[in-house]
Amino acid sequence: MNFEKTVSPQASVQAWADPALSNLPAVESLERAKVNILLVDDRQDKLLALEAVLSGLNENLVKAHSGKEALRYLLHQDFAVILLDVSMPEMDGFQTAALIRKRVHSEHTPIIFITSIQDTQSHISKGYSLGAVDYMLTPIVPAVLQTKVSVFVDLYRKTEQVKAQAERLRQIEEAQHRRQLAEATDRLEAETKRNRFFNLSIDLLAIADFDGYFRQLNPTWEKTLGYTTEELKAIPFQQLVHPDDQAAMTDQCQRLQQDSPTTYFENRCRCKDGSFRWLGWTAAPFVAERLVYIFARDITARKQAEEEIRHLNKELKQRVVELTDVNKELESFTYSISHDLRAPLRSMQSFAGALLEECSEQISAEGKDFARRIFNSARYMDTLLQDLLNYSRLAQSELDLLPINLDAALTEVLAQLDKEVQDKQAQVEIQRPLSSLLAHLPTLKQILTNLLCNAVKFMEPGRTPRIQIWTDRGTNMVRLWVEDNGIGIANEHQERIFGLFQRLHTYQTYPGTGVGLAIVRKGVERMGGRVGVESRPGEGSRFWIELPTAIRTEHAQHDSSR
Image 1: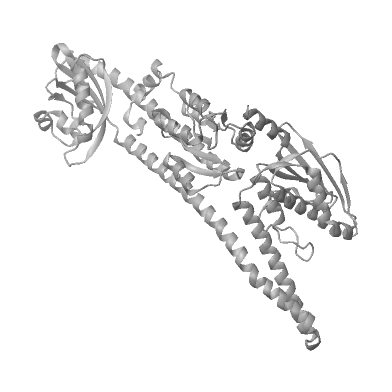
Image 2 (image 1 turned 90 degrees about the vertical axis):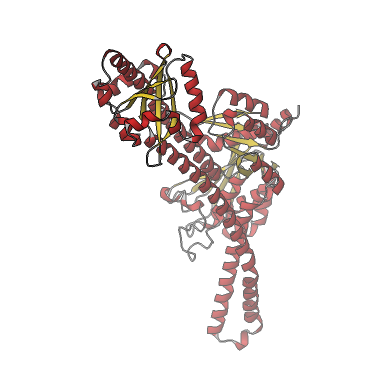
């Protein structure tokens, strides 16, 4: 509703100056205010992991260690979204969600279930039957979780802004209604029914009796509803009210006849052409005269805007669901293609190799060159598809995280890479002891292999590779560093290199598929960690990964078992 078009400048200033409106939040303050996000998990390490992932949203993260504690928070605070662990002692996630939905204040709050349990169909169905908007397996991909939560944060903030704007507008209108009604009442009592204010008001003014008939109306009624004054006076005004709103209208009329104070309410009224328009009513009873003084305003535009916002919010929620389904289908498609294409490629590679070994004398030099190209291309493609398959597995498989002895894991990886290290005469320095951490051992070995292979490979000709490895242990996380003296990476490419198929050099200069660092990022994120790099061209690179400390996890498990 365009308030400037319906309220005079003097009235607008008076409305905004009304002391009753001083406690209403300004829209600008709502835009700056932090939104509450409730994190519910009985394990402190998982709460801290969620907090680390969502801290970038710069919102108010509230942590609850049980379903009961979460319900206590919901009694006093509103939340944009609830991240709820399924497996909790005493009261699990499903029981907690059921109680949340029973409370009117939180029955529509979005719930995202977080679980490390394999997502059987029964679990998923039960979660969605309780009103969940999503169901996610841990370890969680931070970017995906951030995106999903930010959608509900934006939705909540916009909804609160709309509520604040609507409430402020309603209060302004009501305050102005009361003032104008008082002014109209004074003049109607003192002047004739041809009172100038009564006839020239752009709002709908009327006097009705307790029997439900209009006694007097100003011309705005005819302009708004299409009926003449005589037609409106001839029928009970309640006949004009939409059938769905008549019960509430009857209740309001009964209250007014009992000498209740001035009241404001909204309903739909039928126009002469059969359509309906929303009216906001302010009514003041005078029991001694058995009359009701009415001030009404056409609020159809505002109601249509609110309905449009609700429709857009519904479409936004549907879009989130569709995008989630598309991501799942894309991951399944990538896995299927990578797996099914490897068989014919291995056949091509085997036949080309056999051709070179067994038929070498019958093939010309040019034919041998062609066969070698076929062999090398098939081998490269097989390596690429294997990397894609590894990447897809990381995205889909469930990773069991356990305490890992990093010294032992690194020793095994270096033993496997001994030939590459010896061929390059690389110097590997390890600052022991390395801190233990929480990880999935095969995934961690794959990450270490990719980082060490890159450290050896991306080296200027004639330079001996020198690799340094150490750990920094924080309160909750362990950061593992792998530093080299290689060619380095320009700042503008340091984020890009972790993307799928991102290469900064030609295959002939530095062989590779462009998938290795994407696997590193995916694996680290699936284990609840982070990855990054510090580098300058010509000065080497320092790659780092952060994963939860094993000691912290063991303490958390011990505390939860008490």
